[in-house]
Length: 423
Image (cartoon, rainbow, N blue to C red; front, side, top):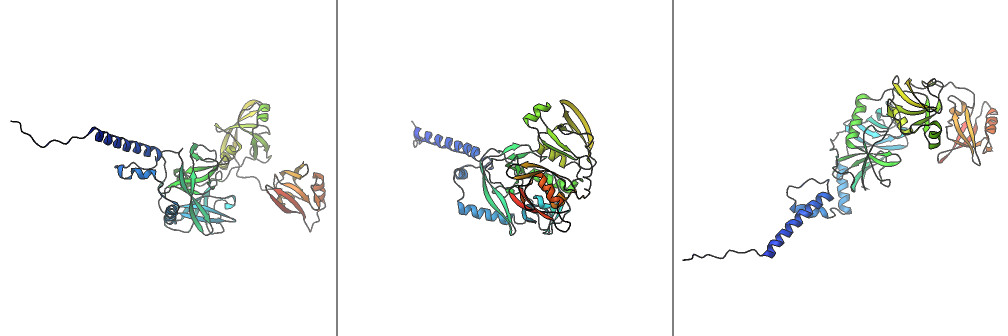
């Protein structure tokens, strides 16, 4: 006797294919989500939130609320520093210490600012500084270490004004690992059109510190967060030695000069101060190729390396002189001698047709130096003479009365300036 039972339900072929298709689609979406959003953490159960990763998660109002919330969280970390006419963004790394990229008016280490802050140490090559400020609670910020750089994303950039600090979103198309002579750490270069203000601090949209916005070869870049903190702590720990001085000016090695000298890389010595450490060792037209065996690639490279040389430090320079390789050792002095004031005009000038005179050199301690004349100034007026010749400038200076200076009009960069030239 055959024992029967209720018939077993059969899953149709179409249903099985549908289940397989759904499963394959979920896996494909998960893979695409990981490719599209590599910064997002892996989800143990990807199904509930999988599709939401493909949706524009916030509109303008939601983004504004998100930024406002981050500003509130970072309020004690972001500080606005006032230096003369500039306001610089700073990041609190200790209760009473911030790190900032100071403008030129920021002053040397140990100099109190108008706002009452004190610069503790400053890297002369980059301008990165650690500054003592009124104490407040320092929040330990997570540091960004992206798994992928060359990928478009929004980052938040700090803006500062005398009233305080704020954040704004900036689209960054990609970041590219790069090296810089100014910074001793690797940097991330950004596309030229990226709106990263030099000295601003950069965050992700969850408040993670991405780094410090800097300029690199005229383009925006980011110094990674780990490097910012590491360099700041090194400044606090070691400070910067008293600046060394060689008394050397250099210029870029152009193709014609390279062909004439027989050099392929380096910088050209354009002037040697007779009072400096290099007076008897270097000569104009020498090409400096290396410092302590490291290649000198550009004037920026030379200036960055020299800025970190302390008084008494020894340097070994590799030179090319008249086609021959020469190696010399120099010891940096503790600074140029104090210039002796003289009654001499102290200008070397050349005619710029139809404009005036370009200042090629200003002698230290001279009347022109005391008046504030700088190399590169274009003299457009001396006393009442427009577009003067060198002889007319000399004659006007010789006629200056002892009790009254004469006026000099100059072009400096994109500004017009009036200076008072006296004896």
